[in-house]
Figure 1 (cartoon, rainbow, N blue to C red):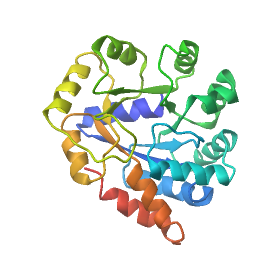
Figure 2: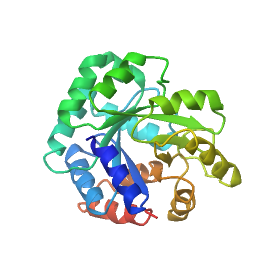
Figure 3: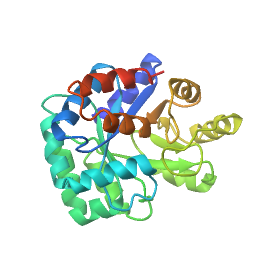
Length: 261
């Protein structure tokens, strides 16, 4: 069974909540990132989203955009990411998702990308600018290879479109509680709870909330509504700010542990 699906099912049986951490591929170095991922597994992070750098990340705020630019300047490529994930698989069973933009994956080649991902030990994809109707073949091939395809929905997604999205999404549904880029200040309330209730009536796929989750209190509040939360900007920012520390993996794990509800 796919590692992410298996982990989400375990959490459901245990009554637990998912905490998913986003980090940029190759940041600040592959050696440090490898140790960070292992430390995140040790403290109980559910899965890691590994950012695939792209020159025009339209859904990302300045912190993640800057991290992507640093990765591109160091020459990080999708091919190298697959190689590094394959190396990571010798050290960790933590579910790993690749999060990026369609052009990068399409240029690599649809079938080649999916086959290489499966061989390397990737568990799935989050492609922010790829709706299900844009490339049905990608989603069907991913399903055949037991790779998750996490899709996004927002507060403005109409119900008929939600039905299409949840019919294709696997692993979890990435819910954006407010429109905008990553790193925004989060506002929540009854509207979010009602929206999650509507989505849950349409699917058994777990719902995780991301974009704007910055504190443990945010994570706790949102976990009352959904099956988990996603934190990216604060983790990426912390890693960059502390990149020169010899104990970066350990201090990153301690920082992230303070965000887990």
